[in-house]
Structure formats: C-alpha cells, structure tokens
Amino acid sequence: PGGLIALGAVAFGLAALGRRRAAAFCALGTLGLAWALSTPWVGYRLWSAVSGPAAAIERTDAQAIVVLGAGLALDDPGYGRDISNDRGLRRAHYAAELERRFGLPILATGGRPQGGLRAEAEAMAEDLTLMGSPPRWIEDQSKDTGENAAFSAEILRDENISRILLVTHATHMPRALAQFDAQGLRSRRTMISSSKWAMAHPNSPSPADLRIPPTKIRWATSARVSAIRIYASSARSRI
Image (cartoon, rainbow, N blue to C red; front, side):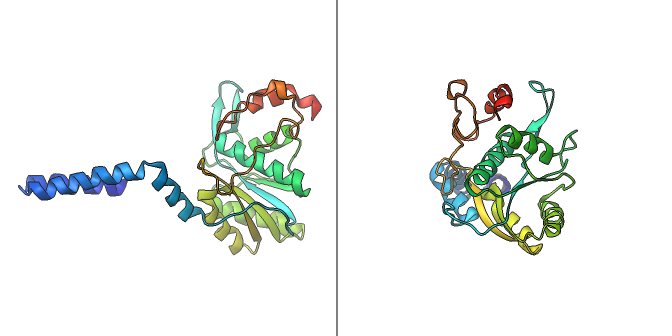
C-alpha cells in the first residue's frame, strides 16, 4: 500500500510540474499495479513465495504440537467474554486434528497483546477442550512471536522436548520457524493456508471427529468456522 501511495504522489508531482505525459504514465502504472495486486492470480503467487513449499504430514518424529495464538474477538457480545478470532480458531482446529492423528500433547501459546481480559492461549484452550483435545500446557505471558518461542521453549525443555509440530498460518510460518529454531526447537511446519488455493490446507475436522451430531452443524467455508462454537457448547457433555 505504501508503494502505491508513493507512486500516486509522484504522479501528482509530475502533473504539477507540467509533465503531463509522464504523470499520466505513472498514474496508469499505479492503477495497473493496484489492479494486479488485487487479483487472485498475483495474490496466490505472492502468498506462495512467502509461505514456501509444504506437504501433507503422513508421519513425524515430533514430541509435541505447539499452536500459536492469532488474536481475540474482544468482549464478544454473543459470549460475554474474549474468544479466539477466526484465525485462532482455525489454528486450534488443525492442532486438534494433528493431536488425533499422532497422539501428541499440545502446547497453546499466546498472551494478551491486545490488552484483553483473557490470554489468547486461554481462549484456544477452551476451543481445544470443546474439540476433545485439551492442551497439556498453556503459555499465557507472551506478547509476540519471539516471546511465543522463548516462553514455550522454557516449558518444553523441562519436559525434555526438542522436536515439535508448529501450527500457524502460512504467511506467519517463516517468522515463527526462525524464532523457534533460535530457541533450539527443531520445528516441522504445519501451515494453514490463508488462501482458497490451499497448498497445505488442513482438512477441517469432521462432525464425527468433534463428536458433535452432524445434523447440528452447518459448515462454513474458508475461515468462517466460528459458528462451530455454538454447537460445540451444546455438545460439551458428549466430549
């Protein structure tokens, strides 16, 4: 966005100097670039460049799953408390899927960077518990990715754990991997796609996996999965 604003300013400057042809060329270039960046084709390729290669995980030697918080919906009026936002809920879903697949314990990490009443990890722990995969550890003091890694590493070292499955969105994965590797944790990427062209798109857990009657769930598309909380609450006794 900043680059487009700068190009627009250059176009106005050229026009003010009387260089109308150059100003028109710059303005058209700005509009063309803005259009290109808004197209799915360009967006997907930029996303792929950031996220890097990924593949479905069939086996692993990891000892634990670490799922990173992604923010909260503060004081949600429907719940009367802070809850995970859609991105955080998708990460929790995938962590629960990996827990069911490999039987590994989960560490949920995330503090209160937004200043809410609850930590991101606490909200994710609630979601994971409703899904039947409660976390073994909760790290609720971190305020950024670096602290996610540092504070999680402290917990895991006490358990003699050095190999993890790291759960976050694809666009966040490079930074997260660098931070966790710096803490001596050997991390396997388990990316959640931010795009409908999911290179490493995790399969959403089925109603049977969540132990919730299928007739009570209307699945949303893409990241719009927050409606599951409503039905999961009614099925808590089944979990």
